[in-house]
Length: 392
Image (tube, rainbow, N blue to C red; front, side, top):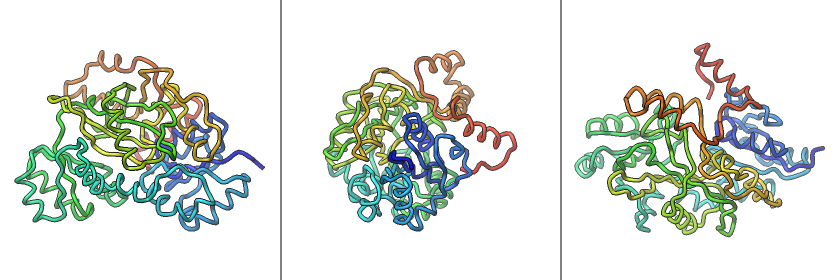
């Protein structure tokens, strides 16, 4: 019988879950992966006790959690690593709070931040710095919006649902440079989204993207040093996810983000994304993620044991000692995404080979290739070589 409190990572079949499982594994914490697709290369890791199909949890959460509790003689800690599991846990939190530990704000707070229509409406009401925003529910509203917006614009759904990601081939957002492109995207995806969120494009390169990472306790206090990630590259370029990030300190970003989170009553891990306008130098809030972010490992690169801190705070255990930044300027990299991004930038002439290698200097955390846990990477390479569709 193992008396350690187990961690259940909900949505283990992605890079967020893989990173957190490795951090907890290195701390001797038993990790159980809950995976929509146990065949994903991220699920091949040796850092978990076992990998379980998510249907076993979703179909009967009470029985499942009680079985885990009986096996380990302790309630498990639930850590959602995908948005859909944040929403699922939000719906169930009152029913399962006696069966598991978790660090999550009230459902109404989650909804206000995770539903982009609600968030941008609330942000406008509270005069937060967001890009000019329009909501389009139908083609009549689209006609009006075409005459009101300044192109280019970014198009987002209220949520990145499974239906949206399948319909768009995995695109979280789109950029439209003109009305014709906007209308074409609406004809393809407006029905899937239910509502289009149109926002003025903030001019500036990938390096103008910044994300504020934090974890707040139930009183709204920060549990560790907060980290601001400056994107050095993203994939795809311009509208993608982080590929190479670096820790920086920007007081304006930190103050604005903490004011937002505390004002709304947030609890747990989150990222508040900003983009700095190239001309005005003003920082605009782009969105808030109510889960650990993709480049969560930047904390560890800077010497902060964030994954263990989140686990311990949720379970009411003593917090680890390493909760302050001891390696400022640390970096985080996803080699798979960064090589693709660097090649794209090199092809369009805005990155030299010398600049690429210079960007890699310094201490960095490699999120996808780890010598102590190579099987996920080798599985990914195997699918690339054989040309088989990758089971994400």
